[in-house]
Length: 407
Length: 128
Image (cartoon, rainbow over all chains, first blue to last red; front, side, top):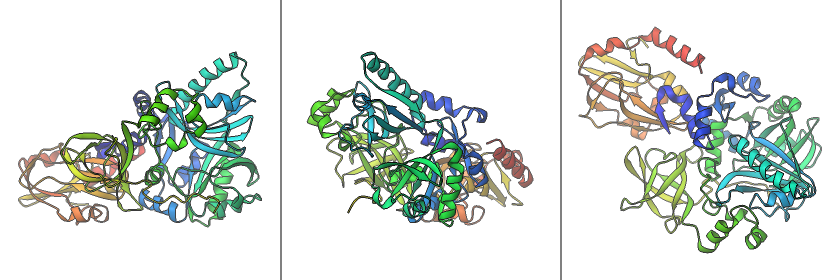
């Protein structure tokens, strides 16, 4: 996305915005007063947060340090992100698992209590409605977090199916956690810093695992997950305790963990090869095309039973016609919608996210190309403002991930 | 900066003798963040007041750069292709972008002076 300099504040929002175009337009023109504020709004402003409209919320795009420094600091030390705009949701009832399995590709039944996974909500055509991290708290309680920009359509989708499911006697209900705030603590100092604030032994909590525990005097939902490729946590905290927790985390890190905004969050997730819904994944893109085949549980591949399963299982058997791949390139950083061509100048696909990697100091991007042209090392041309620049299909993640897994 | 004229799209122009030098302002580079790529026109081409002549890419976004005046491009700052960060470190000196032979010098009168531009930036920041 581009704009003249005076559009600066806006252009980043367009690039980061997700969901359908109408929603983007609605948010884009929303006046400041219409924007929702997290309980940390004043804290952000006091720390120099540059607030921008994002998915209907006023959120910090960056603080006093640059996006470059902020991104690098998260990987070297740590970053604290306010992601309270995202929507936390609990499904409860003895049929929660079988209900959710109708809507997502994950083997929810196969998850051990206290563990979770990234999954995709699919539509009848096998396209993605949203991606979400889901956790099986207990057999009758699923906790999940969906994208802020997808909140309304996701909730409508779940509600519609829940009504039908309950009408047939299914036992499931939901609770939307609007009473809670969500903080993401990411980077090598995440665990040591958070350990100062809880008696639970965090060295026993591995990537993808979940626990309800006391942190800094408040009952929190803790998931060892994130959106940066680093080790770290997402902490769902009662909103009245969120400010104290944010302050405590910064203080315990002795200034090394810094507040980190949406700008660095976008760089970090791109370096980690993670999709941004609305850019890299959309209604018409299937999880197989998006490279998320690993997230389709084995049992689900055999049994199906989720929306769009026919389309998705057929793609699994025959191979998808397009695939999401990573690129490195010369010249200006590719951006969303940059055309991808083969070396002869034929159109082979489109970039969906791209930018300059603060950690690698070079251009990185992801996009979709025709199957067959997706192998690492395949040369391509990427068009930016009408000029073709050299690109090469590159394995993702671009920056190695550091998830905390049992050795 | 004294002696400079400013466009409301945050470019500056310094008119000295037959040639005018053009770049982006300190305010603009500060909002953009680290510049990672600069796209400039070829010498010999022409630019028009208010029309784009190039682009600046930062970690944050892509921005078009408009020319504050019309004229013929006589020189471009080739150092920016290797060291785009000059725009951040020295927006008014080493980070200049193009030199233009103005075709209608009277256009300069439509631009803002330093005080006016400072006020303009304050107002713009306040409205965001």
